[in-house]
Amino acid sequence: MERVPILKIGDILLVSIQVDMSDQTAVQLQEDLAERIVATGCHGVIIDITALDIVDSFVGRMLSTIASISKVLDAETVVVGMRPAVAITLVELGLSLNGIRTALNVERGMELIAASRADEWDEADVDEDAETTATP
Amino acid sequence: MERVPILKIGDILLVSIQVDMSDQTAVQLQEDLAERIVATGCHGVIIDITALDIVDSFVGRMLSTIASISKVLDAETVVVGMRPAVAITLVELGLSLNGIRTALNVERGMELIAASRADEWDEADVDEDAETTATP
Image (tube, rainbow over all chains, first blue to last red; front, side):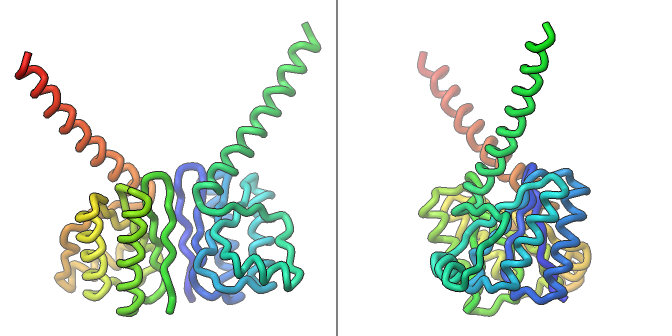
């Protein structure tokens, strides 16, 4: 059985999908990814699908599942490298990638994750400030 | 024909090899990589072989060729993610990966490239300093 490698780059886990995903490979990837998120404490998952010519409902569902699992483990998922033809097919098939954020390439995906983490921190700061000023 | 995707992360191009390399795929990857190095001006190439169970003489030669091409284009190549079994087989087969630097994982590979670039800059600085002090 083929296993999709997961690469750690800073605070982000990078998965580049290049092989045809079977049921087993998909489940294995989900398990591996969940384990790596917990083991590394990473807050972002980037899934590169540059190599995919087709994203059917199976792959779409797999991406959604990965995004949901990551979210529960406090990590954000961004899908990058979607080909124009894939995007067109997705829309034609009526498949919406629920709960999945997309970016043009890995770098933009990293920026997206960094920005959304920064936002969360800002909000936490604001909450704290409000509390401090409310009890002078 | 399958095409191995090349991901740009900062100053580095990342290639994760997951499919069995045919002659054609290997040549295509070399061409793509050379083009991307020139187009992006990147100074580092990281090749991840986590997914490879076997590195035979064909793959070994491909890695050496990529390293040589990159070097001519002023980019350094680091091979990362080699499995222990692969390393053992390489030695047993008497294959030495000529001109190829290796690192344990992508992060270490990035550090290696950053460090060797820094060294080059330092040397350039020293040369400049020496010149300045020689002509007061």
